[in-house]
Length: 458
Ligand code: GLC
Image 1: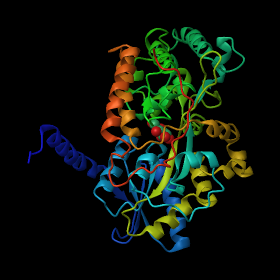
Image 2: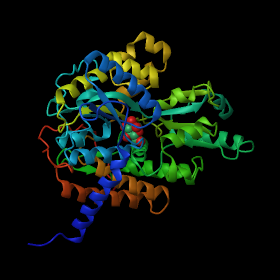
Image 3: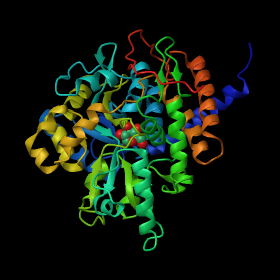
Image 4: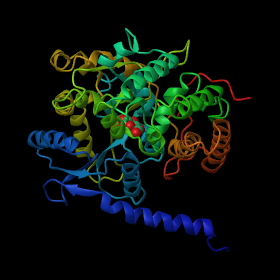
């Protein structure tokens, strides 16, 4: 028998390293006896933790079940690694956790989740639930909050650009951003027209999918189930993204080195940009006391190429119960509570996040406090999910590398897409229709969303 080859050894070593690196990132906070508490893993931002504390305390008081919050890193890539380590080593905790909507396909297909049969599906947006959370007809996760990309703009600067409404097309966006940038530079040399998430991480893929629009993106072939990214619309998107930085010079070069959500938000919030692409969470922060742009911010759908409609990527976090939990019944009760009207309202009021439940967008009290919810609802309804395939994470990693290379001008957009396609084809051969996580098998009825096919790059 042959011993392990270099590649296998490298993978094993890096797998172990990953475990060692990830363990310290998963640290517990809160109170309670670690042996008996139900463990709930959440994101690590301080404001988020405070909101979850409230929800947990109320649940404990009502149910008599004690819950410990497990704080994960704020970075979603690190959160994913932490959860994957727990699942692959079949850890009993966390019992219940929040997942980026982009990972639900992987977790479902890997067999890491138990169905949430105890949840009432009616209050959620039906199509969204079917596309992202239903696997083999069973509900494997449920949305806790929703995200969709939107354009933030400075209402006070719009006039300077000679505009009466926010830009709807790429050309309007680029021209008005350039104009205002030129006007602002003498008094603020660090001013830029448009900021968006271009660093090498999941957010870059999200932005790319939005630029790529309805006829591009990550397309699934009906016949083979294979993934195509070498598409004309994607080439156009990548060229435009690169040109925003280097040709029109309205997005800073730091776009591809460091711009993630918070870098983009603080840039805009400090008064240094005319337009910003971000998620709805930025709204409450922009409008908070002490924000230099308070009262000067508007929101609009993302602009599109001439003659097309803008596309938002669907984001957000969903709750799931671990297959390896020894407290599944309690964990399911907790998941039901987190998605209940009462708990969702608490989170909305605390954080201004957009609830996963559709019925809260009709809630008078919430609408009074957050009048923009009405507009967001429509954006979420139409937002386009990332494909629900088990190896989405790997596809995304390939795209991140090549898109970033094109933005840094290390390779042309054509070559970036061609090479990304070659690597994705080989990923499919490696993973086939089996999830990387192992354990589960993809069933025939795995819910691939159906996309209209774009035109391939000739
Ligand atoms: C937000 C979205 C999530 C997305 C991530 C990318 O957290 O909710 O779905 O993957 O941003 O940075």
